[in-house]
Image (cartoon, rainbow, N blue to C red; front, side):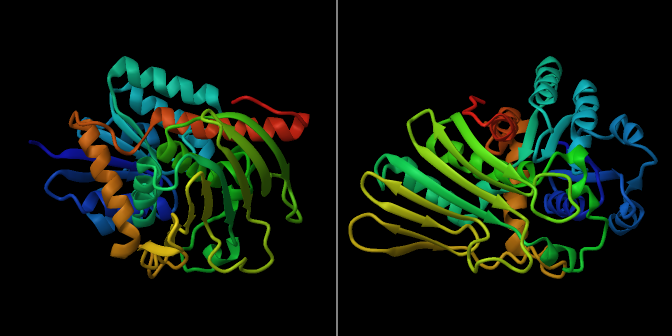
Length: 347
């Protein structure tokens, strides 16, 4: 079986992450070209690949079978759409797009050309999340009634972590706001674990950081189609590192037990016999450039890339699909609308 040949759009932190993921599958995949950003020439030299002069020239290469889109959010739709129209398979960083309408264009193009479209939801492949999914699906805590998730982020840690680059796109109105950078992961994990969808949303979205024009903090309450209630706290408006062990934390209440899920720490369960640790995630090290590309962090991206390659080869798609990406952005748009109009919104 011939290798799948990849091109990458975007040379920042995530562009390099996907380059490392592709390189891991030397017998099944090959990285042939990169475009976009000031670091593209350096990465091209490092990996011994072509550095294209434009997005169009990379996507139109005859030796590119699949494209990874790792550019700022507002560029995803145009870049992924051209690739899909040319019959290229596409793996898009979340959020898949910034609007539901653009996402629908991508899904329609993929259907027309029979291309596979995947979304980067690497949290599906973290050790604790995989085990939590098994527990929820097996009924270990009964029917899930409520879930609270906290997603506090201190931007200063990343911006001082040796990654370099321009982080201005975080506060660019074209990229909409912080919510669509964070919440899709939480929404996807709950949809994936429960098989249920968001049907009602109420939210308050605010901008607390001085000098910023986009949303940086959201408190939301959601109802899922199976009756589960889900609350979300997402914010990057912190003057210093936030609460310990709360970077990404789920607390689930079921009819028969409780789950305390820290994707970057411990997964604990109490199903009647007291609290016990079900699994531990080794330190990922995603806040330091020195540790960002080690085996612990890259494991999820390797597994995700394998799932995407398997999907292209005709196996069931185990990574996030285009429709999973649509669900994430539709829910975020509903939160923004709820906040503006001060009412419940159905995604």
